[in-house]
Length: 346
Image (cartoon, rainbow, N blue to C red; front, side):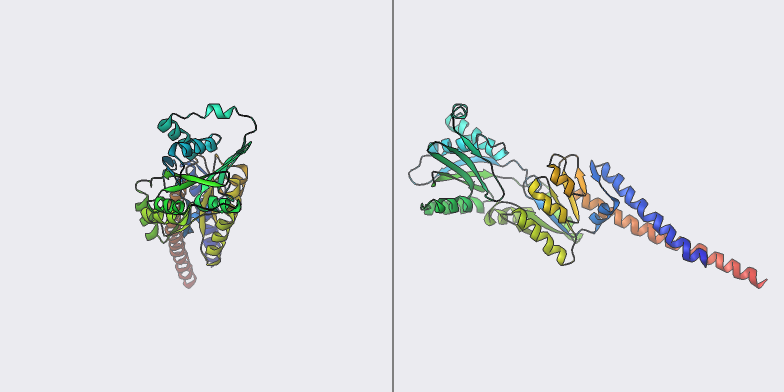
């Protein structure tokens, strides 16, 4: 009886940590550092998956394909201003605007870089716009609703055709980038994004596993709706801010769900710290890496799906081994007990 009572918990107690270590080893083969075996096991229990649209669901290199002016503004004028606002923009979208303006109109950004007094304004998740200020000139480009609010704050009217153009681009799955100069709308830059091949099938597989997929994007709701429908995700969060991400995670956790997400920026750190499984990109900020419990050395946001799949496999392996171990121990102990009782009768 002492063997029965004592050795079964000991066997299970030694088995579970070994499975956790095996899971960490399996992830390291995928270039993912798991900071604990518990994090790998949690990945197997995840039932809500938060995925960034750019780089995970789509190819991540949105390209400017068209300049659409409004009012009496010419397309060339819009291209010049959009390029000026994008000179210091190192994102794929910003570089594509500079390239498109150069290809269509032979415009080059080098001369304007030499002008004095230029102050570039970087993009932020709160303002959702960027631009440049110089003497007598203030240029902004960003999300349609953010620029619309900016124009109204300057006391100017928003052209009625601007919303029509932006909505048309959004419904097609593209992203409208509105450009304004001195508080007046000049037009829209059409950014085109492409959903990754095979991603819809992977989401169908996730759904069968009982995992809800949620797309996180800074795009407006119309664009998010089109991309979400094409990709086949269960839900989406449009115009996402760090506060909105954190709130969404807490809402799911309050409902008894386990949440997994990826991030790479300082503004992702609060959400990563809150998530049950948090994967930080190796190229991300120090704050993001410290808040996460896993680090992807390849900096591939899609890896989160593979991590969850690995966690599910680990849980199935743990269940099978635990069942076998208990059955094996119980059978041995019954044999010992029967043999002992038989000896006592003699």
